[in-house]
Length: 111
Image 1 (cartoon, rainbow, N blue to C red):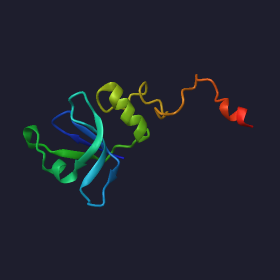
Image 2: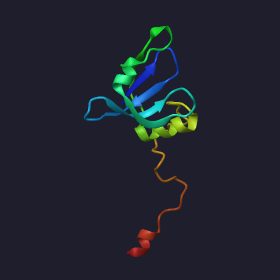
Image 3: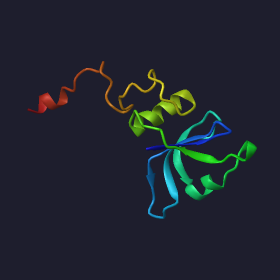
Image 4: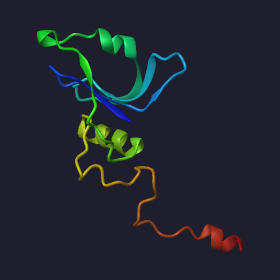
């Protein structure tokens, strides 16, 4: 996973894969409007964007992912922006069963 950001704005992308065309990237996209989403973006389009002061979109070479993509995407939706806040990204996938649910007894009944 790599992080790309607008140096003169609040847009951020966590891009995890590139298509065979060498241009289409996929991952959580946050344009800084409060509605991040999973989606695709063109590498050529990112390269062509110039923000205030003529600054473009840059890859954060020091970025190290601390959580899986599923956790990052869920936390971004909850927060309204891409975040690695511990309270939102506790390391569990949002689709794992909640620990307080009763155990699944259906499997035991089949035996």
